[in-house]
Amino acid sequence: MSHRITLLPGDGIGPEVVDATVTVLEATGVSFKWDRHDKVGAAAMAEFGNPLPEHVLESIRENTVALKGPITTPIGKGFKSVNVGLRQKLDLFANVRPCKSLPGLKTPFQDVDLMIFRENTEGLYSGIENFDERLEIADTISRITKRGSERIINFAFEYARTHGRKKITLVHKANILKQAGALFLGIGRDVAAEYPEIEVNDRIIDNMCMQLVMYPDRYDCVVTTNLFGDILSDLCAGLVGGLGVVAGANIGEDCAVFEAVHGSAPDIAGQGIANPTALIRSGELMLRHLGEVSAADVLHEELLGCYAEGDHLTSDVGGSSTTAEFAERLAERISSRS
Ligand code: NAI
Ligand code: MG
Image 1 (cartoon, rainbow, N blue to C red):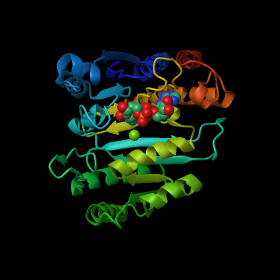
Image 2: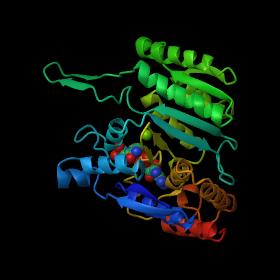
Image 3: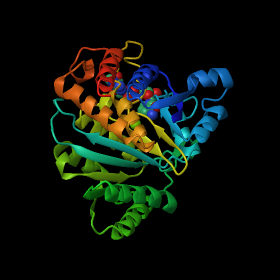
Image 4: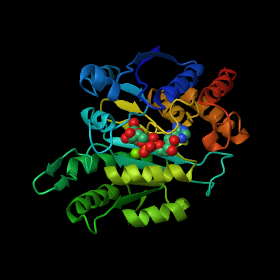
């Protein structure tokens, strides 16, 4: 059977890491039919007058799974984020970001193993914004709902239960954001009562940043609202080797979109030096989602092998290979296993 997947190369380093990931995924022997849409974001805005055209959404709804490169969002002006738009329109409420140390990669801590569960559709990213030109006042509303909080927190606890994880930390700012914070935290405590085998604690976001930088081994799963999750996932990426190595999955009831944590990296785009590991690992999550567990296991083992042996790594993780060289070497290792 062939899996039909919507492929969104995105922009910046997107097409480079997407091509690399496709090479690696195809080396596993799993058969894919790629439904590729090159024009999303600024390119779609220029061609269709809409950065997230309906035919792209339709393709994902139909295929139910997408693999996506990063998409640039103009800063402080221009069209709204396509990344946020996709998550909201497809109701991909759970953003799952595993941050685990890689063998052989020198970082300040060797045994980091964190799972970040970020609410992906509301909070400060709800899109409720206003600028009063006369008074020069900007409002951005953070909307937290009972339903939104319940589903991400339930998702995190269920994941912990089914994956043998021991502990969940609820991250919030309920001391200052009394309404939204109390709602999220209260639901967290209610849900926790249904999972007596999982240890639960909570941390205020600012303290949590310091805790993670100093004592990452004290933490296991983290569940939090949209903005805090966005920031914490880049922080945790920094603990395990940087944005070049951390995968992500956006999961909803009907569809799932797999993408790296990183953005379009305009500073290195077009040079062929971006690390495709983050998107390749997102591809591994996609394989597991598709039920292709043995292919995912082989990919996982060979990727770890590349890191343990320093085999054709890119420059961000201490090597000197290009994006394509790393992908080809990893694909070769995977093919030799079958
Ligand atoms: P970024 O994640 O693109 O880059 C931050 C730093 O990490 C840069 O120095 C970059 O070179 C490095 N980096 C990122 N990915 C890398 C990789 N695979 N290999 C090696 N180095 C890597 O964040 P930035 O610069 O803040 O954002 C750039 C654009 O990306 C913005 O327009 C932003 O809106 C967009 N973005 C899109 C995301 C998405 O599509 N889901 C997520 C985050 C940002
Ligand atoms: Mg981010």
